[in-house]
Image (cartoon, rainbow, N blue to C red; front, side, top):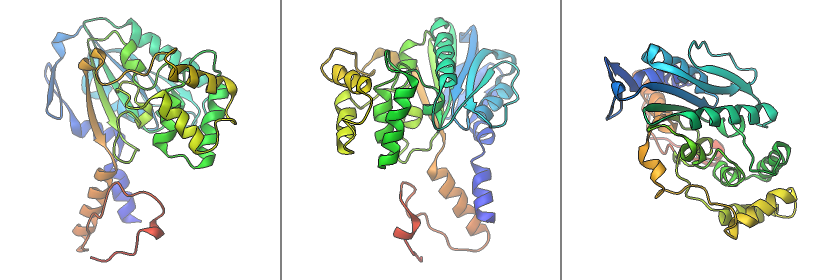
Length: 304
């Protein structure tokens, strides 16, 4: 149990941000990136996910009065983050409801109002897909929830689930990045997705989407759900596949020239922390594979 506790402590969202994001006077340092804060009139923070509240607390403590506002969406029932400049709202996880829609609308409206002299910082983590839900009209939140539930019950992977979600959304799959008026977007991410695919973590609200309407349809057909999902969802995907609805923004879209991404924590960090703890106790420990998935009984035992 001590190994688990040590590993979980190393993944504390507040500490991950404090460890990777530094301020030196008027400079913000994130990894190898240096951002001159004086180049911007306002810094705004938006976020969604199970770790986004703690991430935003850390950002407020680092940036202090440089933060002019923002909005972070956290799971209902989770501790309310202690924030003074960024608004926090709660929404359900894993099944979105009207609170998820209201949160998404408010967050998009804030991003759209930002100007050329503004910096937008995103605090994104797992759970963001459910917490930010803005269905493409005329799809309802109930219909979208039904699609997600059918996929989860069928055993779809998180990448497959988010591929479909993105193509039924007006915020996921890069649409938040496309719609934001900010000159610069700094995307800070704690990954819960094997392989750290930015377009799949929280369904990639400010990341280019590599998937298509055709992919989404293929996933539903793979799990024999094409005839089971609400007809309005199938019709939207079909219209998109025919080119009647715009595809999600792709990597060549100029809107992503202003976005930089930094993964602050992931499965590799967790594995390295567990290895460090075990070695400190004189136990030989080797990382076999941080991207390994599935039930542990199918991957062991290993000795080495």
